[in-house]
Amino acid sequence: MDNRVFEIIPKRADGRFCVLQITDTHLFEDERADLLGVVTKESFAAVLEAIASQHIIYDFVTVTGDISQDYSAQSYCLFARMASALKAPVFFLPGNHDDGPLEYRIFGPLGINTSRQLICGNWLFVFLNSEVYAQAHGWVLRSELDFLAKCCEKYPSLHKVVGIHLPLMVGSTWLDTQTLHNQDEFRAFIRRMQTVKLVLSGHVHQEFDEIRRGVRYLATPSTSIQFMPKSHEFELDNKAPGWRYLYFNPDGTFDTEVFRLPLGSFVPNFGALGY
Image: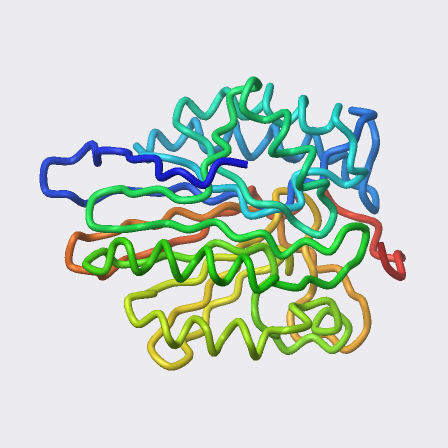
């Protein structure tokens, strides 16, 4: 784990830059293994191929958790090997299916950046750990919130993005039991950090976009299976794997767009009752 700040100079002279977000790859030690009928290595490879075909220039990549499905070192080695195709610095944060200490220990030599704070142009990105090992829900420790506060206080003039695996409740009864179990504390802390513009998440395997008290909360489709929005019980969606681009401006504004593979790509087992 590296709490030192990492700096990236935007490629554009006007200070605008682009970030690629991918999330919830759910890779296994066994590269042939599937998650509810989707071989996650193959769906991730297809996403990487589609990203390459777009020829969009992005300054760095953020991966918002659940890189692994089985907590294995081999799954992280597989991710690092595949992510090398992205040709840009890759940053990550742990998800509820990850082994965070293992990730921070092995990713550096594998070419994945372990820095937890990043400055790019007029923006500061802070990556938090909400992992509760081997549990579906998350919890942000006070030490993580203190780390966020120190980062924000050190760079008061910068616009802030907070990365965390688990977002707010998204209106799905079953999925909202797996949220941050101290999300009220987290939201209150975010409100105190008045220069936070965006909280960027994964976990929910769907597109989510909501503004609360001036802070925008975004979650992004998985590169593997997708969950049906607003569902009461566990339900899979027929939408294809996806990814997100974010375009940040020096004045604190930003734009974003989500892309997906073609409909019908990597169809899961719709008879599954959970995962």
